[in-house]
Image (cartoon, rainbow, N blue to C red; front, side, top):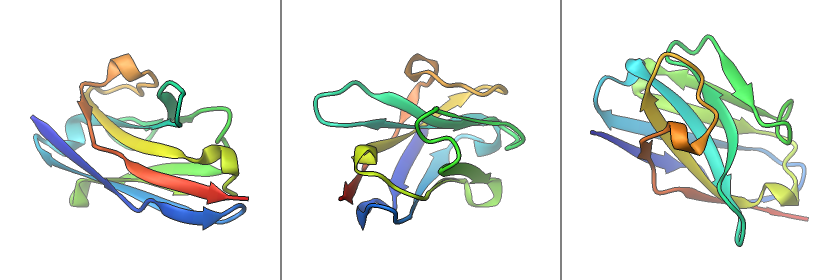
Length: 124
């Protein structure tokens, strides 16, 4: 079993930055591929970013590519999502996810562990 706890959300003005963190406990963190997803009110949960087990490969949704950066620190059992040039349309609850996989996983169905989410609100 893997427990995931997100933090770092909040209210920020358009153009600003936030860094989300997701700390894992339980199984061996370095064996897990990790992902970030988000869900806005009335919308389906959507992929944001993913990183493979080694941190050597990442992929991003088109809407955030060039503005968001995902990284991991296995010594701290933590993944990060650095968000810059934030837009009002980035407003959502952001979720961290994990799966025991060596690849990069970019779909909600590919993950079997989820955190509770952290709210990000971007004002215009």
